[in-house]
Structure formats: structure tokens, C-alpha cells
Image (tube, rainbow over all chains, first blue to last red; front, side, top):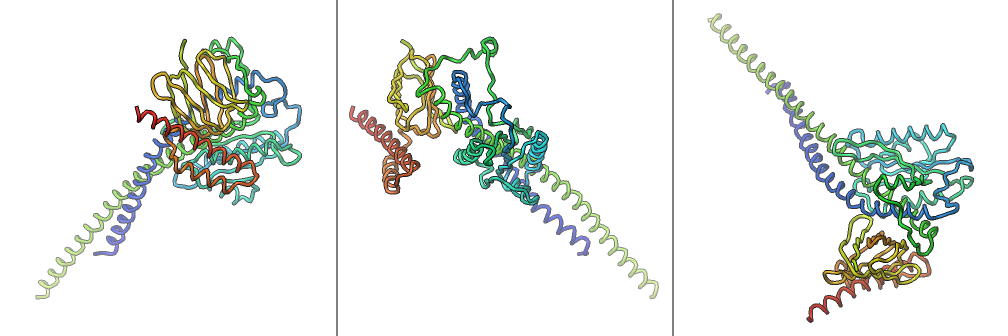
Length: 304
Length: 138
């Protein structure tokens, strides 16, 4: 066998092995998207009821609640951002587009004169920040593809603690989350949401009637409206972080499935090209051998 | 008299939903019983069992941790950080967990909460068991 042919065969074999791996990863990712989507849907009823309860409690509470104070009288100095990326690569542009969105948010907050305090989820973001030598307030990793509520609790505890500390002592005045929002199998959008302070949407009676939900019922609160609100807001933050984590996980699997299916297609293409080249090499080898034999026979008969 | 539409929802799943004639829960202020046509209430729940008397079957007991509940127009929402139906809890394991929590306990609030959680679970599991036994003898 000629040297050229051997090299082609070897490359075909290695591309075939790669293709098997990418195909397997594609299948794993597609089965996990379904599971991740189910988790997102299973968390929905809680989110809906909690949001309703918070709005009801907020509208019947008077006075100054730190989580809702939306006035800009106190100059804001610092803002925390939570960037949710994946732990592993091989997911196309998944992590880098979230990080890019985070960079844009950082610039935006910088322009408003706020100091940005980063909180990170996922090894990809941690690596990005470490490589640039930036200081990170806190980071978590190891659960990006299957986040649990405990993870969300831990993260929101850190965020809440920073929000409740005055900005003169290193606390933050605003908290934002950057994550990949899962719209469908094919569409995911990098998204920024502001968690705190909560932007209260004051609902007028006409608006309520228009949306069909009706005005909030006149709840009697136990213990009291403000106490209930104090209990609910940490839950609200936890729930927001949890939902973001779940959506990010679904997006991660979708991005990985897409990247791996593209890689499998590329491998197939490559195998096709390589086997054509290998066939050509084999054919030219045969042609050469024949012409050598014919040439040899000619030389023999001529000398005889 | 109408009936209550009850939904028990944990952060990551919907646990149970159905109609009921009575819901008994313990809030931070004390026990509260909800009958149909109760006024709208939004309350924080203590770590405790919630008992639901259904209209069409056996009663349901749920262990609730870190939850609250909302009642409005005969719709009852019980929301919890973690919630377990009585039938899902293994009595032996719940007993062990309680003993472990007691052994580890010092004065810290977190550990006291762990004991309370374990106690609630055990209570719910035992209630479920006695219910099964009662229905078995008949």
C-alpha cells in the first residue's frame, strides 16, 4: 500500500471515531433537553402563584420596603451581576454569547457610574474572568446542566446579603442576572433581568380588567402584610435565580445538541471527501503499477 | 356549600391538586382551618403537617417546609420550598433522620430547624400509616 493511501485511511478512521463521539453527545443532549424542559414547566405553577402573592402583598403594604424602593434619591454606587454559563464546552457559542451579554451590561452600568461586582456560575465564566485577572465576588460551578433548588438558594443568599449591605460597606444597590433564555429548541436568547430592586408594576383597575385577571383580592395577611412580604421576597429572588438556572440548563443542552449535530455533519462531509481522495490515490497507484509492468515487459521484449 | 380547589405546589413540581371540604394548616400565628367561602388569606406556614380533607376520597397529609398559602374564592394554594406527601415518606428513614438531627443538635437555629423538619416529616408519615391501618381493618 502506498504511503499516501495509508495516510488517507488513517485520517478517515480518526474522523469516523470523532463522528461517533459527536453523534453520541448529540443524542445525549437531545434527551436531556426534554428533561430540562420538563423541569422548567414543573417549576411554573410555583412561580405563577408566588408572583401573584408578592404583587398582592406589595400593593397592600405601605411604607418603605428596601427591596422595592425604586427612588434614585440615594445615589447608587455598586451593582452586582450574576452571569450564568456552562461548566463544559462543546456547546457552540453558548457560554461566550452569555459572557458577551454580561460584558455589555458591565459597560452599561459603568457608564452610569456604578462599580460592577461579578458573581459567576459555571466554569466557562470563571475561566474568562480569571484569565483577565478580574476580581470576582463569588463563583459556583459543577451544576450548570442539572441545577437544584439548593444551588439557587445558596446563590440567592449571597446576592441578598450583598443587597442588604449598605454600599459604603461593600454592598450592592442593584442586582442583575445574565443568562441564556430558552425560547424553543432552536432559539435561545441571551437575556438580562434586574432582580433587585423589584420593579413594581402598579396595576390599575382598568388594566386589571383588560388583562382579565381582575384586581387582587383583599387578602387578610398573617402575620402582617409587610412581614409576609419580607418572607416572600427572599423566596422570590430564589425562585428567579432557580428559574434562570433551569432555563440556562435547557439552553445549554439545546446549544450543545446543535453544535454536536453540526460537528457530526461536518465529519460526514470530511469522510466523504477523504474517501474520494483515498480512492483516487488507490486508483493512481494501480495505474502506476500497470504502467510499470507494461514498461518492464516492453523493455524485456525490446532487449530480446 | 361549595368546595375548595386545593393545589399543593413545591418549587420544582406540583404535588397534589383536587377538591376538598377542609384544609387545616399551621401558620406562624397558630392553626387555621379553611372551609369553603373563607375570606381571602395570605399566610406564612410554620414547618408542620397540612391536613386536607378531600371530598371524594381519603384525607391527604402533606409535610411542608418553608411555605406559605393563599386562599381566595375557594382556591387554596399551598406553596412550599419542599413538600412531601405522607405516602412518600418512609417511616424508618424519617425516624433515623430525626435521631440524627437530635444527636447533632446544638443551639444553632439551623440545627433546631433541621429537628423541626424531621419531626414534621415523621408526624406526617405516622399519620399516613395510621390512616392506612384504619382503612385496612374495615
